[in-house]
Length: 632
Image (cartoon, rainbow, N blue to C red; front, side):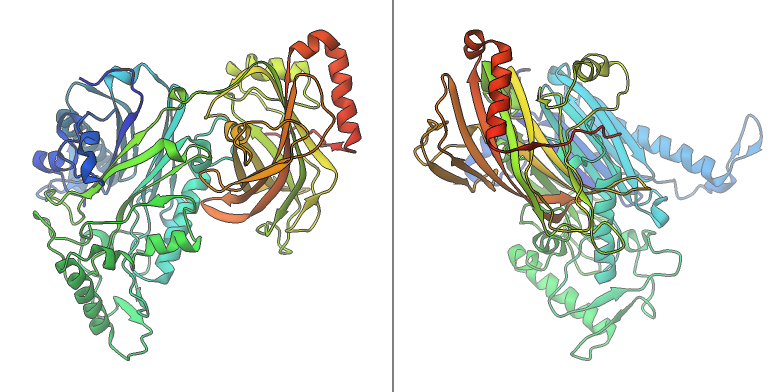
C-alpha cells in the first residue's frame, strides 16, 4: 500500500490515437497498467526498476479519434422510437460520442480499480482527456481547471486541437495538455503543426493570474502529449502531401490509405526520382533502421526534436529519445507491422517542462510504446515520471524579516514585432501568484484588501506594477526606471514565481502580448557567490553565474554603506522572452535584493525605516516605475 502522504509523486502519462475503433479490454490493459502499478514497465535506468514498483499517484489519459460506431448500423437513418422523429446526423454523433465517452471511462476504471477516482473527464470533438488520482491523495487536490482550443478548419472544428487539465496538489501545479495536430507529410504541414501548438498555448489557458500567461509558464510542471503527427524527414528529400480540397484537416492520413497515387504528393527531388520511387525509398530506409533496431539512427530524422532545437515550437520542453519502434502507421494487430503507404514515424509523443528553479524536481522513469494494443493504426505510448512536490522542499525563511527586490537597468533585445511597421511599443508588467505575498510602490490599502480578501469571492481587476512604454523599437531600454517590490514576515516556497510580461502598447485597440519571462524568487534568493555563502557582507565583491537549472541568473555584490541587521546582494538576470512556445527576444536586468531584520523597525520606528528606504532609493537616482491599472 502506498501512503497518502508521499515525498515524491509518481505520475503516469498515457496517450493513444484510437483510430476510430473501440479498444478491446486486453488492448486497454496493454496500455494502462492494471491497478495503476508500473512494475511491468521498462525503466529508463535498468538499475532503478524499484522506482516503478509503486502505484502511480496521478494518471493522465489522452485519446484522439476516440469516437466509433458499429459498422452494421446506419446512424443517419436512426429514429427515436418513442417519438418517431428522424434524428439528424449531429444528434446521432452526439449520442455516439457520449456512449463512447462512457465506455472509455468504464474501461479505464475497470483497469485501474477502485483505488482510483476520476477528477477530470473532458471531451472536445474526437479528443478525450481523463485524469485519475489515487483516492488516498484525492483530498490534497486543491483545484482542477479545464480548458481547450480547436485548431481544425478555421480554428473552429474540433477534429484537431488540444485539451488542458491543470490540477493543484497542495502547492504543486501540474498541467496535462493532450493534443491532436495537423496530419500529413511535407513542409507546409510541419509548419501547420507548429502553428497548432502556438494556437493551443495561446487559447487554452488555465492560469488564475492573467491571460498573459499560457499553461507552459504558469504551472510547476507541464506534460504535453498526444498524436502530434510529426514525421520522419530524411535530409534532402522533399515530399509534400496533396490533400483533396476541403479536406486539409480531415484525418484521411491517420487511419486510411493514402488519398490516391495519382495526386497524393508532389516532390522537388534533385535525383529526378518519381514520387512513388522516392516515397518507397524513404519507407525502405526507415524500415531498415527498424529491422536493425537502430532507433537512435532513425530518431535523428524526427521532425519534432529538430523543430524544438530550431526554436520552431515548444522551446524549453524536453522530448526523450524514442528508443522503440515508430508508432505510426501500423496494421491493427500485435507487434509493429507497418503499412506500405507511409514512412514509419514517431507521431505519438510525450514532452515535459518544469518552471524556472524546479527542473531538478522532475525525473523521467520510463518511456515506451505499447505493441500489444491491436485496435488502432497507431501504437499507444506511456511515460512515467517522479515529481518532488513543492511542499516537501524547504522554503526560504523570511520570518521576522523584510525583503526588498528592486529591479533596475531593465532592457530587452530582439523582440518580435507586434505592429504593422515591423516594430513594437513595448512596456513591462510585473505579475505574481497568490503564493507570493508581494507589495509594490503605489499599492494602496484598498488595493490590498480588495485583492487578498474580497478577491477570493468576487472577480477583480487586479493592479500590477508596470513601466512606461517605449515607442517604435525592438530593443527597448528603460533608462532610470526601477520597479520596487517588497514582502514582510513570510516564507518563500519553490512555487513562488514572478512573471515579467512584455506587452505592446496600442492606442486604439487592446494591447498585444509579446512574451513573458519567468523568474523563481526562491532561486534568486538562494543564488550563492563564489565562496558559497548565501548572502555577502555588504562590502564583499564577487559574482557567480548560475548556468544550471535557472540559467541566466548571475550574482553580483556591490560595496555599500553598512547597516545594522541588513544583508544585500545584486543578481543579474539574462533570460529568454517566451511566447506561445517560441523565443520572442531576450530580457536583461539587475535585481537588488535586501533583507532587513524587523528588530531594526523596533529600534528606528516604521516611519524612520520608510524614510531610510526613500533615502537609499534617492541616492541611487532612481525613478520608480509608473504604476498603472492593467485591466485583465
